[in-house]
Length: 296
Length: 194
Image 1 (cartoon, rainbow over the protein chains, first blue to last red):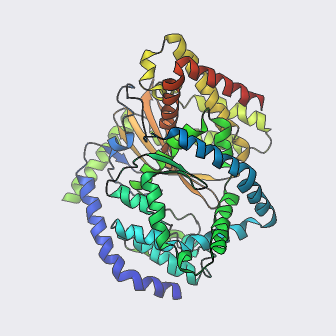
Image 2 (cartoon, rainbow over the protein chains, first blue to last red; image 1 turned 180 degrees about the vertical axis):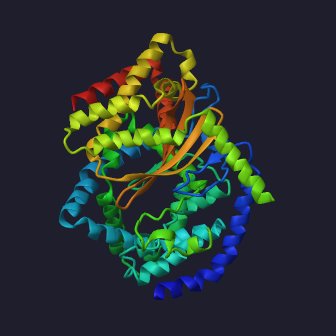
Image 3 (cartoon, rainbow over the protein chains, first blue to last red; image 1 turned 180 degrees about the horizontal axis):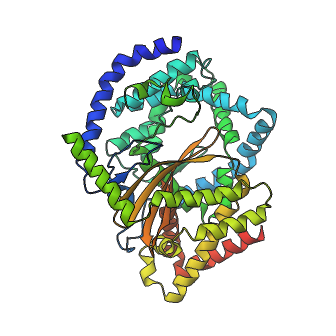
């Protein structure tokens, strides 16, 4: 009941934003004829004529594409040094601790700790969504924060996603800069943080001003402890992604650099799907999801 | 009126593609179902599963196209012998990378979101859904020899082929073509040794 009231409070705002977005999308669709789109009947009725060519990239330019430089890397020797340092730090410090953490605390506990940190980072995501004029993502973040802070007990649980199917939208200042056309500059491997770039490293610094922990009057030691717990929680939930890359690629440095460049590019030009992962009569039809009520 | 026109257009496009070519999405579903069939079979040992998956996947992939796109501009300069050696090694690297992960499989289903077709090219959007993760996976396909074949897989916006092309390209610039092949050989040996 309360949930309904909360969501209704946002309703007026959603209607406004929703209609604007729906029209924009329709115009886009009709402009893009000549490409056949067949949506599978049962899963989705999304008939958008996305930019097919853009999605294919240069993949069909007869195989003679120039060797791809996904991101420029003039300081490679330096970056490789930091990469080596991070690698050792990972295998000899961070990972063993994460393993111990994983052993002592069951997964649900660690997921909740992760949810808690993620919920507190809402200002970063919401602020950047707003800066990019992504009002839909901004609304989802506010909605998620309200629902998860109250019903999710201070953000330990994520009913906004698990019940209502409203997913987090990942935004940061690096993406905001990218959204307005700022390029990476050059690739940068930061100590502890890992793959970054001039743009995204600046983004991390700017985002730190929207981090609530900054204003929590913590001592430096406590602050580092909090950040360390956040990082270790994430590591403990990860399924040895880094180990896999190191084991399987000829040159992990190059592989991670390429993946980073591609991933960030995709995030900047992101087109998110929102699928309700819960099946069953109660959850069918996105009953709890206000974004679905108004056809986002 | 507008509605009728649009629905007419849709029916037409549906008919055209349905008539001329088999559906790429159906093809991806076939591949995924066939792999999941093996993975979810409790009676098989990991080694058996590996062999089964390897055999099944290959008929859906266009390895020649994958190798050529991975090398990009370097494909042109390579000799026939080098191309062949590269293709053979590349298959083994991919197998070593992905088949060794088979043991990590712990459930999950695939949702088919949409397909887009243009001439002999297609993009199929899917999502892998597991307990708390949802990973968008996109298949890029090409129509060759009477069937739709996968030549690239894009996971969360990261294209497999682009990743290999970018890193292999840099290794070729640094160590030359033979240098890359030597490194690949070493990697394949290490993978097989595990």
